[in-house]
Image 1 (cartoon, rainbow, N blue to C red):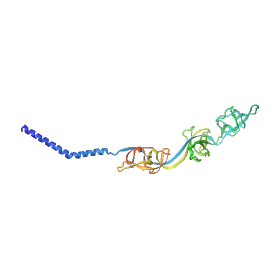
Image 2: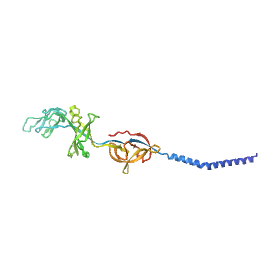
Image 3: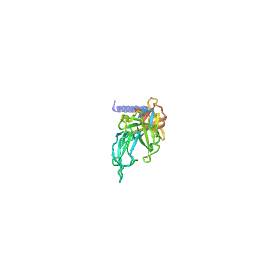
Image 4: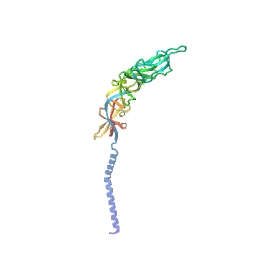
Length: 324
């Protein structure tokens, strides 16, 4: 075979290969391109998953508190007064001294310029503890000025003043817990026994008195003493057995309040379901839910701000329950 004939046959082979390749592209190219597009589309339309924390809706009693400070006082205490005006020349007691009725408390010199009079004794009118620091020797007094105060060795109560802005709803009978610095971690039960009918215009406050519960023996066991400082938590309102969720679970949008309940889609995956609710009071981080959800339903309490409803969820944990 000569050289010219070999070249001619090579050209024909090249043309045949190009033709086959062209036909293959025309026949299989569109299907391959479509498959590639479908793959890209499937990757780009994968359902997003949102990580959230949840908690079950639960029933509990919500309480509103008023926190104030007060002092332990005796239910029977008497101010000690002199019978005459004059100058204190002796004081026989100090703060905390126990005295019996008739004990000598102090002496007053009623003398005036140009005349000398006998000293006037001041006696304890009742038995008890000196609960106010006596006036100092040398003080000039009158019969209306109290020298000191004696509190009887009996039962005790708590005296407190409530700011004017907090007096709404105050009434005898409200329960309270009392905390004393001398006994950290211990709670004493009490209740409001009296509410002053008038407001102190100088301090803009109203006085209330609270009585200890029957389990508190007062000075009989030496634990409770007049003059002690007390922290008081008064239960002003109570909402028993209400359905609640953590306050942060409630989302408000244009005046409409809602929560996100965890439900399941057809594939059994957890999804967010938006529920419009009728919310009530919010106390100590809990919100009352009057309608819209049921007890025991699982509520989204963290991550709900980015939800709108229908999103697939990944539950990464539950918030521990714990109400009042």
